[in-house]
Length: 154
Image: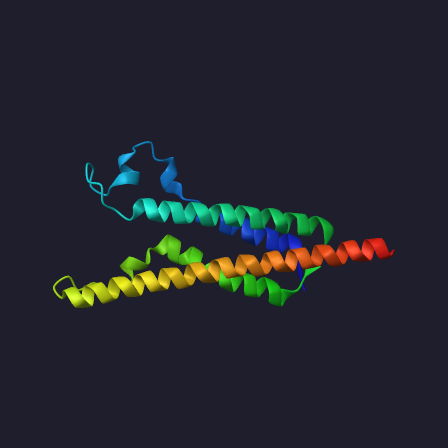
């Protein structure tokens, strides 16, 4: 068993880490292109992805806060499962998986297969991320239903 305040603190820190700091920049070219005046980049997609994850983790942190107000301890296995499904997507969002794959620009077939591999990695990590949030939501609502049932029974 682990204290729910510890889980709340942990997921609050993850929420701060995933915040897309690119939004703070005043220059609009940073969100539209890598080279000023060009319209091609992957940066706006990364910002949108991180913003969606940030909002999701804000909601999850809020529910951990509500859980910490009502409950003292939570099962360690559930926290570890939620953390193990959430953490890889956050790390991949901050590390930029494209830099982890060795790109061979001289062989187009190899280049395309490497880009596809990066896309598959991102898709799988995002699926794991949202699966973790759905499992936490199911746990939270089940816990809330049980606590309401116990309160009515008393």
